[in-house]
Length: 374
Ligand code: SF4
Image (cartoon, rainbow, N blue to C red):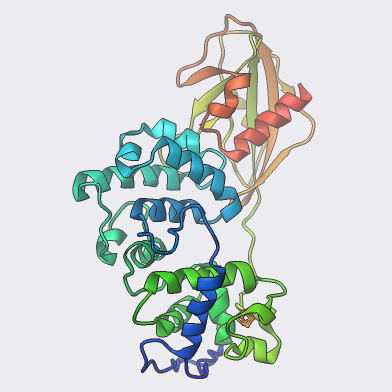
């Protein structure tokens, strides 16, 4: 690799990329040699000499979006043992997939995962395409996932750039431009490093470097294969990269949740609408989540039951932070007799079977709050 010369300042428009004459620069060769010695043993990663399985690569990449290897590992193992092939996953019911996904968050991904499996089976005969455009056309597959599957499963020469890779590359080249404007610049710089062979290993080496050595705080530069090539390391300001514009947290929304306990140890649940946040997941009945919350207005959203209901406002609130906004819910609880029927669109679920329901984390918090204070 030529000395990194693409210091992309806020005022700098043109990006001078390092020239790539050789198929593999000495630094990239060092990165690959480091990867050969220190690659993480991940459950979805092919061992040396094994052919990567595109189904496993895709499944792990979808699961890993917005979360950690540690959080994903048990979900991945469960999915794989239950649905070992894409045909098996395509034949599963959406409900079962959502249930198995519950707790991993970002539930649109689980729905897309299921739709994508069906499309691959129906349109591609159960084989993932290796072509980037065809991958990109599949449900739930964006630029990053298409590049990751293409590079890792099929060795297509492309670099998937996630948050870890952005951090490594922004430090290596000391990219001064702030996010999100820096994203395309970092992509170009990452692509400029791509060797002409071992594209899959190169992608995974960058991911591993970001995940294990080039950490957000106190990167272990002494263990990095690029201590000399890295501009941020030379300057000693590694933690200043990637440069980010100050974050604006979304405005707080508030709402009410209504937890109805039946005397035979059941609780009332309903399904959320098919579209929007937490689509198709289960929930306790509740009001809208608004910026101008009004408790007496929200109480009009309480479920209508054919029983005399005495609502009790539980002390405390439940807080949850979504990607775009924080949420605070007040919780009302009531107890009704065993003979009470569920209103249209809702059903009674045994309390000791709640863990099997496709309940998002927010609703698990609401139920725990109500059960604690009952
Ligand atoms: S030298 Fe340090 S900052 Fe630079 S890429 Fe390596 S770990 Fe990251």
